[in-house]
Structure formats: C-alpha cells, structure tokens
Image (tube, rainbow, N blue to C red; front, side):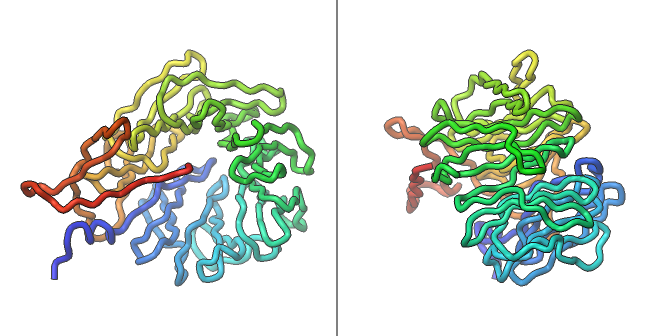
Length: 364
C-alpha cells in the first residue's frame, strides 16, 4: 500500500551539512541515514565520488577530518552507548584502526591538528581528562578534573587549545579556558553563577589568536570576540531580537551570524570593521547549521514545514540523499495568543479539522 505523505517524509533519507578539511576543502565528510541508520560518508568534490565510510549495526554519529583531509576520525561506541574509543582510516578507504592508545570512555570533544597532532577529551567515572597526542609519542595528559570539561578547538597555529569546564560545579553554565599544549593556563573567563560561556571557533587567519565566544550576559545568546593572549574581549552590538550564533568568514574580517527568532532562522553577515549587518537571501525556515567555504560561498542545512531538509548554497540544492525525495508539507502560519507565539498547520481540505496541540516547555 502507498504510505501516507507524512510517513514518507518522516522516513525519507536525510544528510547533514558536510564539513571539509581545513587545508584541503575538496575533501568533505557528512552523515546520512540513507543506509537505514546514520553513517558517515566521504565526498571528493573533484571526482564527485561519495563513499560510505562507516557501517555499524547502531550507526555512527561522530566524525572529523584532519586538516589535510588524509584521515577520517570517527567514534566507535559500544552498541550505541556513547562509550568507546576513536578510530581513524584513510580518506581514500581501507581498514580502520584505533586512533590513540587511550582507554574507552565517553567522548568530550576532539581537536585535530596537522602532522599527527590531536587533542582528545574523554570522561568516565573519575571525571574528565584531556589528552595531547603526537605522532610517534605516548599520550600526554593535558588536564583532569572530577567535573565536566571538554575540548573545543585548536588555534590556527596549533599552539593553544580552548576548553569548556565546570570546575565551579555547574555544567549547565560552563566557563572557558585557553591553555597551551603543556597544560599551562593562558586565560580564563567565567561570567559567574547562572551565566554560561561557550568557546566558538578560532580565527581561520594565520597568526590571528582570536576566537568567538558565546555569552548570555543580557539574557540572550550573543557572540563576542576574545583575544586571550592580549586579555581583550570585544562584545558585539547586534540589534536583533533573538538568540545569535556565529562563525567566521575565511578572511576573519566578518562573521556569519545565525539569528533564531520566532522559530525561524535568518543568516547575516556582520562586518567587524564597519559593524554593518547584511541579511543574506534564503527561504524562510530553520537552519540547523551553516558554514562559509574558503571562496566565500555559504553552505547551510535548511528545512521548513513546507519543504523537507536540504543542504543548500546560494539558493541551489547542493546535496541530497539517494532514493525517493521526501514529499512536501503545508506551510506554518504564525499565530499570537496573548503574546505567546504559535504556529498553525492545517490540511488543504475544508475546515473543521481534528486538532493536535504541541506545547513547548523549558527551561532552555
């Protein structure tokens, strides 16, 4: 029997936003559930070849490319328990092998550098530990604490690492620290009880030791630019009503902003010199992730009530999974009920309809 459109849409294959190797952007990695579960796929732009990298009974959700794109790291957990170890294999294929002589644990972040450098975060019953790995050397313990901590990123020159930690005992509102690879603290930031910080990406420009920091000092998520070596924090004045996330443009002179408001996402380009905010052109809906390619093109993962999830770039469909495309739906209508925003979706058939209410709570 022919399935109802809503069932076909729910079961239709999806793809995630691809990530690319920093120094070799023609090599990409993405996730797809086209095999019936989420697995990782390698994509070679030059040849157009797509290759399934992982194939495990429970699927595979975490993966990363090394900067040159020669290796793919992926997390091999025990039957979907999220408890396991990192493995890696060549981008071109072949068998995988353990990426590090580290015990099995829960993953708490991964930052990959060049020439075999990696910073790996793990957690187990003893707490959180961060390790520095270098090719041909034993693992070096960088940090350990009984409270939660995670690796967030390596600076472009691979001399500094950003971490989030909750040494103050509140993992919902972490602090941020920058350390060198010997474990020495370079700078710390914490906004106090009830206010969390998130370490965003480091500047992609060589020699630039700034990173994006997300804070909630005004009650909404906002980006700032932190220079930990100089001890400077530049808060950005952004005249938008909702929460704002950010990543870099390749020249580090502008940020790509994702503004979430009234259950829709809008992308902007923020010029850091002039503070000019430019709204980017894309259909209304939800954007799960967005990144800027080295040539300045913006890639994003987009969906709406009327259209199923897609990976798009400059208004065109960029990547879709094999098989039958998911059917379209009906657009949501905005409603305001005593100051509370709501959506209404209804069939094309005449009213009245049986009505289902979905109530979204908190605290987040």
